[in-house]
Image 1: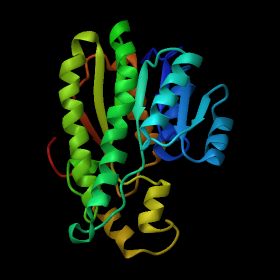
Image 2: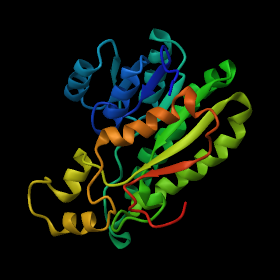
Image 3: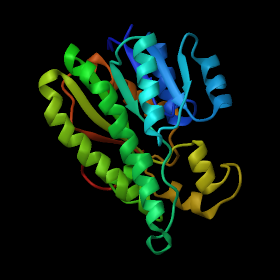
Image 4: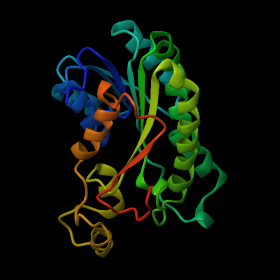
Length: 253
């Protein structure tokens, strides 16, 4: 399969680690020009070593000014963004009764508004050139709620509704909007929730027992779907939310 990614300009937010870095590496391997952003400079430096020639910019996606600066910098140095991967760390876990207004506002800013602002910055150029891909990294929690992830389960549904609506508004300009919904994946966030995988943990064992494939995903396995949806090969796919979860979500769609 020819993905048609050579020379395409890709911007991956939160691209210095985990799924974001895996996606950046996938696009880079296909010959795309890659730009990543992230908050931690040391992680960005380490990621840059894996992505020769890539552009790495320190930025916080919860900060509107940072988003505007990153998108402007990428356009000035590489050209208009062809493919945007909207990615960010998830909101913290918590039960409803323990969450204050500020927790909800922070989750909206991180999970929803970062996607809105990043897309707003790059979409006009995509529409003008009549080609673009927007791929949102979400969670299988939009298919089947994950216990204790009240904020994530709730706010990611807003992203899903936004993405579906936007996909209809920009389809005539050949801009495709899709969402990838990873299941349990071996990343730093999962280690923070469940602890190191080499340490006994009944909660981890229970989760594994509920995944038909019997294991957590590798970040590269999620990235494969992101790269496909960002490619020319996915030319008739838009408005979708695709679970990559080892069969963990039990619904039909």
